[in-house]
Length: 196
Image (cartoon, rainbow, N blue to C red; front, side):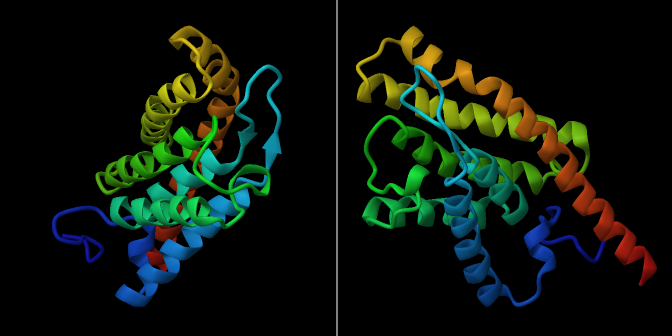
């Protein structure tokens, strides 16, 4: 049994950082901050009330790297602070309303899912990471598209065309990047451990 095994599950990257409670508080705050920072990378999407941002990528990476509990807590902190007025949603906005709000709510659930999958090895190889990220994106859309339907008075096809379809190529690129990042981080961990 590996010394990195924690209560019958595989560790996530955050488990490798010592200092339990302090580590968790710092990582949750850092995960929320990273997502807020990534939300400022904004590309308008013609014809869509939802911009393309880096926050989905950050939310899924945070969930994967921190595990389901810390990842969900980080994204819940991001959501709560933004809803309370911290201007760290896209374009420095705040408040939980409008076309993008459902996607932000979806980040909490997506972070929990990808974190759980990471604890089962979903971040160890590029192929597994692709599957993990695809499922995480699906959760974001499962919450975001119906919210868009309600907030913009669109039918399903209109919400799909404005709130999902234009983002699929960008999501595919983000998934490819993530499929390289997390498995590479684990390869580095293995290399360092082998040298000890």
